[in-house]
Image (cartoon, rainbow, N blue to C red; front, top):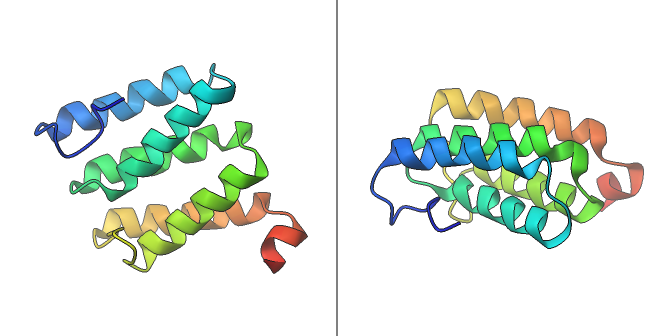
Length: 117
């Protein structure tokens, strides 16, 4: 899963890898799903906006399989990205719109306890 990092100089490869990982991850369980989830959340820090976009889109698609902890983690990553903090950068207008839309989507999935925390 090392293909999705800035050490791979080809952003197109990283973006395509994200799309393929999403396709595979919908059929994964347990540790393998967790590894795919971690890889996609790491991709949110990619230097290329298109790769970040693909990762957010993939995470939203996979959200149907999340446990509460994964939902909490992704929500925080999206908030950090939207606010450009903790190494996340969402300065691209297209990505800001996607982050905002994704935050709204995830808010609908959070239960009352998660919202209170």
